[in-house]
Length: 302
Image 1 (cartoon, one colour):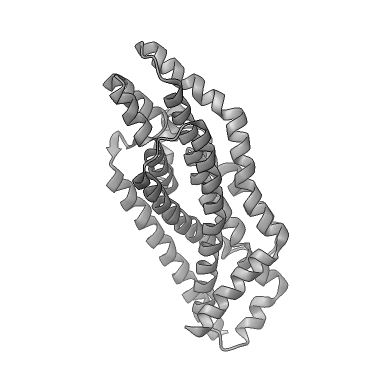
Image 2 (cartoon, helix red, strand yellow; image 1 turned 180 degrees about the vertical axis):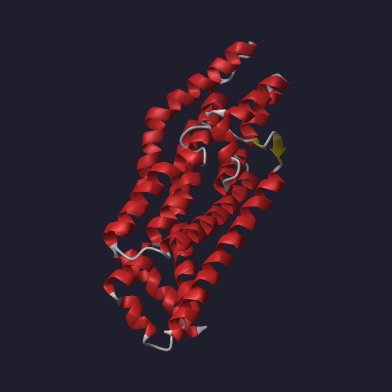
């Protein structure tokens, strides 16, 4: 246990000591928040107004701002939990590139201990970065229109924790096969540019074609995004209902912002989303453990 805790501290310190890696991981979510607020807010605002105009509902401007800011916050949080974890987990590959991993394997440190320390250190580092981004998002939401309850904030924190574990497990499985700086850069670029689209963070799944909708319904990250969206927007949508918004409009808004996700035509409940996300985390961690176990056996035979 002492060796494990030492390895976790070592990996965490190296991440925060690498100023380039740390500031890249920290600044990226904050830049996304500025870009979202600057460019996407009007797009979301106009989309909501079109729905409300079509049903003849006059929305309160504060509620509209709260709906837009909640949408932007949930998008940023959902994508950051995964993309930041890939950035934080690059240390695992860098140790291969620099030869530090080989040096550590010459010591009594077990491969399993080393693998688990990478996972835990990456999870902790990612949580710190994402929580800083979450605080910035809460400040933005407060300026636009606050509708979140204490329970909503706690549930979003739970979503952040689970999505971070999912992102770390996914990055651990993928990074296990990487062994060069070029591969790190390539994977980081692909994940940063693509993940936001396929999980519905950059563009709502409701705006995608049926084929893509069916495809992303098989991706666990989609349900993580839906959970953050639901907990970010549940209260403001409830206020709109109290203000007299028709039920059909509630359904349209929920679908537009991906609070409700359908799997092959069947709507997935909140409990079902949590189950899918948790099973995905367990499955990916299991694959990561298995790969390290097989690698350890191969190393012993050779």
